[in-house]
Image 1: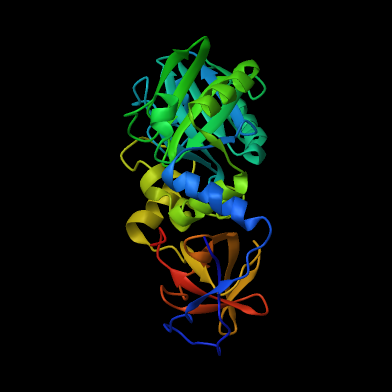
Image 2: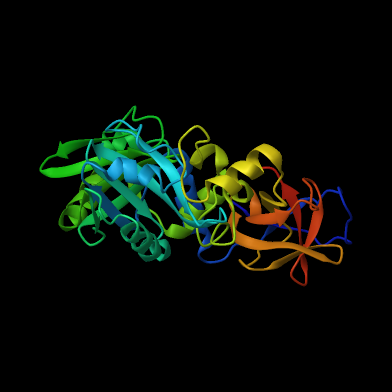
Length: 342
């Protein structure tokens, strides 16, 4: 597949389209990345994500406690179901986002980005005193192996696992595995000491190893923000575009609920998550300018084999869909709807 960039063109104003895409010379690493990307679109790519922070909450009060801490419905989850949720501060800003799995009536698992693990664990332990529950960090005990692509369910023998975050366990020739439905395939959770054997089993079944860079391309194309990139301690759920997935407005109180509800029912966020169709590859953190005003900065960026240079950013509403913004000193970007359309 070709690597793309935009041909040079004079600066454009509000609402004008970027110039046509032209092929760029491929780098030495590009053919391998293109092959991995094709695997993710046609087969199943395998990526070890065991670096994620992992926590188990056990005890009769676990679900009720998390119900009052996280943005989504937790107490109502049946065993075998899960949810995406966030932990907020009192101003409604995101301190962590996480996948929550109801393993049993009295056992809940959640995993999250490594840098958010310790702060979230410290917060949850601080406010759990006097409750019948135990919060344990179990990162070293468990491995997470992601399969991404349309063949993931068949290769892992977890076909039909749905909706997202639904999970079930099985014994795979002596390896106890929990399969979890994701937006791109299935995650496999197993004991850390069995991870090597599980990877071998998956390779034999047809999974192909991929790099994190390839998985990031698919994430960016799908328009899903990531903690530490597009969302973080200065971002509210509405600004990050995660309200529909992460917030339940019918549940009881939780930390940060009031500003989140007020913004949802009465206001309009000044910033929101958007896509960027870039004129050239760009680095995370590069400033975005509309005229003389800075309207945001790039959270994530990549060169998609299908779409060329693209990125994600939380931008001010002055920059509308279809507008062209300056990126750093030399590049430009068109503000795009998410997810990206091929």
